[in-house]
Length: 140
Image (cartoon, rainbow, N blue to C red; front, side):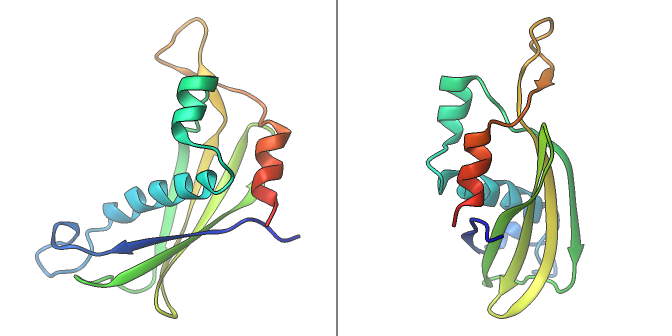
């Protein structure tokens, strides 16, 4: 089955690096988040529409990365992202970060479909993922 993929471009800037001009690793997780929202937006699903109009959030449940090569100041990266696993209330977004043809790292984010908990709005309550959201991300 083919799936929708998105390609998010990032340039490593001075503020993204440590003293050795190598990408400070937490930045990759921020870029994963941006790449996920870029993927959702390719379906017409914006964060504003989800949160403000539908009251839905897609919080992060788990994130991981496997670092293969360092990124350096000035590198132009492309983050390829797609959903590679669906569960009833959660889904996993896979990310591959490349500098040209070279893979720098691979990672995933596990996210859930959630609304504020009715008894405690500071918490979330996971709900089944709507078929139309899943279908939109399964279309190429």
